[in-house]
Length: 364
Ligand code: AMP
Image (cartoon, rainbow, N blue to C red; front, side, top):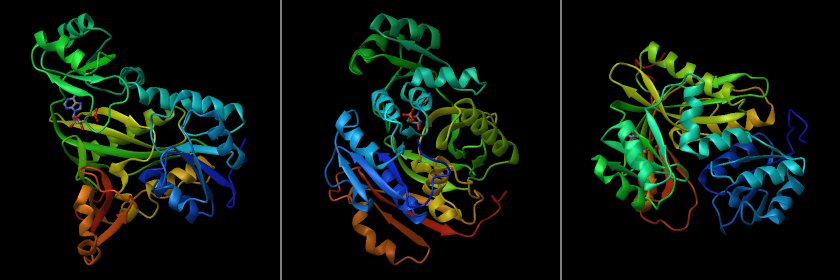
């Protein structure tokens, strides 16, 4: 087991070699840690900035053992970490943070909403279905229209479809692969917001101001933070974050996606047990960003400040938009963050820019 607080010079393991792993590795390096990345793909963005890279599948015992040989504390950059990987690491005396319960809850949309409702956090109404007949019955319960999503492994709007009429429910179920689904009532939201928060080893909480998020084709396009919100809305988000973090006995950073309704209520859409794209603004809008905060939390260090020191508009650079790097580099108000990915496939997250301006009246 890791001896906490983890001292500089120790090695932190990260499952996943994408951009989130890369930015976590960069933050860890700034605090004096080495990082070991476990990743199946060659030439991964995180591996190129890490001290060690183990190539292998996340559920491959030999790869996990190679990671355990160098790191006594392991975290992850994505929520679909197999439960068997966590069990295998734990059996080798390696601690995995955030914990297995947070992963299990976040991996299944029905578990997630059931957990949230059980701790008094509101979501849209929902029903589960495992068969075409079950989908029809679930529609009868929720009413049309409803959004059908696969329970597991959906991301960026994939694996979900609107059901406009109850009669379509069975066909939509089949079109999503015949896998277990959730049916969700429509959230009649005025804005999509998110809150990034952290919980430390001693239960200390650190909650960032909310971001306002805009999606295109199911993918995050743009976030503005701090979002202009009333003190009551900010308090509501902070209460939700605190309930979720303590309810999961959570260690590390979490991303909580929210719907703001016209009556001022917040519903939770999703929780991501990891650093989050809607928290990238903190890299230039806060003294301690979400990546360093996560490393501090899992390493048992004190958490850092979360107040905004600037207003940030974060834009994701998708596909060949990254080719404009030189233009962005020439803008004095723009901070450029590139992920080192070789292949700019359409829609792929290649980097992001944070456009920084002085804090305005949204300051709390
Ligand atoms: P998700 O994959 O659950 O994050 O959903 C992707 C996007 O679909 C969200 O950011 C919303 O814009 C939209 N969405 C998801 N669930 C609902 C819902 N129940 N009602 C309305 N819009 C939704």
